Image (cartoon, rainbow, N blue to C red):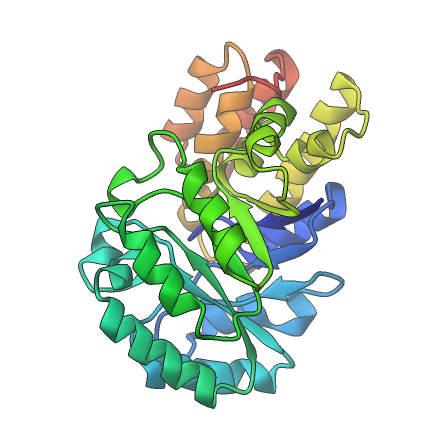
Amino acid sequence: MNYYMAPMEGLTTYIFRNAFHQYYGGIDKYFTPFLCNRHMSSREKNDILPEHNSGMCTIPQILTNRAEDFLSLCQDLASYGYDTVNLNLGCPSGTVVAKGRGAGFLAYPDKLDAFLYEIFSRCPLSISIKTRIGMEQESEWDTLLSIYQKYPIAELIIHPRLQKEGYGGIPHVSAYKKAEEILSCPLCYNGDIISPATQEKTLTVLPGIKTIMIGRGLLKNPLLPSLLRLENTTAGDAVSTLKDFHDTILEGYLSIMSGDMNTLYKMKDLWTFLGQSFNGADKYLKAIRKARTVADYRLAANAVFRTCPYLPCQEE
């Protein structure tokens, strides 16, 4: 099985990806948070610089509904040595959808078809796509599949939910099965793989899966790729490694950001997920959220690692 790290805006930055690669690994492809403007900002350039992604297979992701913007970004990315990009047709965020981007683009199949024709005919890079199965109804998937069939998609990453479902409800496995039957391009499954048990359950109904993308489950439990690969690890080693991983991320942000608060915003967002794997950590997590200095933050975070049981295999 191949495992990919899903892109999550503001979280899976190159600081996070490098620390993860150093302490955990087990990821075959890392996808960057999306690029959405015609030209990259200095922050976005830092995130895709080859020297900031050394030793990793990193795929830049683009979020746009304008072919010229997509092609302009691809030209820039090619100059940095990239040979593949990923098109985001899966983000369900209301602000993104309102602009007809991400999953919102799926509501306009004719425009999407014209967009894909333009980029596949002119882009010098290979193009993979991350997609939802529609906006409102599962029947939309048939139209989308007929469009995807037309193009030489390097890989189609399918989150088998509708935009309106967000991250709730049960994935539509029948939609993924239909893609397996119709499409000839490589496929990747994305959605609700948070433990070996959920992987086994998914593979029982979709035994043809060869590649899985994991996002929220990996942020909650960085051990997840190792657990999915059935690798052994002890509880003590797991906590020690997690603390080292956390500290490396913290120091990485401190080295590139000015002022404590910018770093603290990043770390607090991370604890939204990490905190779910510790038992009895509520008062320390509250202290993390209230921290106004890095010193106060360190005291609260260290208390979690020191005193709270780490339960990485909890089911939701």
